[in-house]
Image: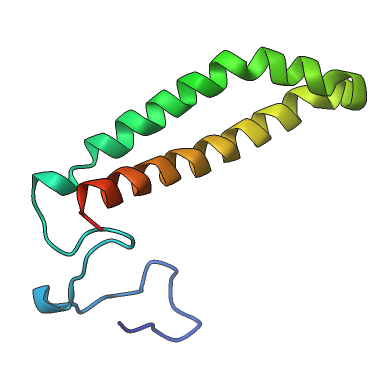
Length: 101
């Protein structure tokens, strides 16, 4: 990978990688196949987003006495981060259960 001097344009970064230098995505199995399909990730993420949407009114109601108007944005941030974390942990659990990792 090379970068031109500071005075160059922003888009002037170039890469010289061969196929032998390409690796797997982080936290993925080393062997490709049907076991490493991204559809399980997508389905679990969609299910967690649906669950977060279902409980969002209760979370906002619980936060509203303490935070007032800020309850809506704080609930969205908390539910969004929790959704991402919980879905990644569920996928990791399933992959360990199936012997992929």
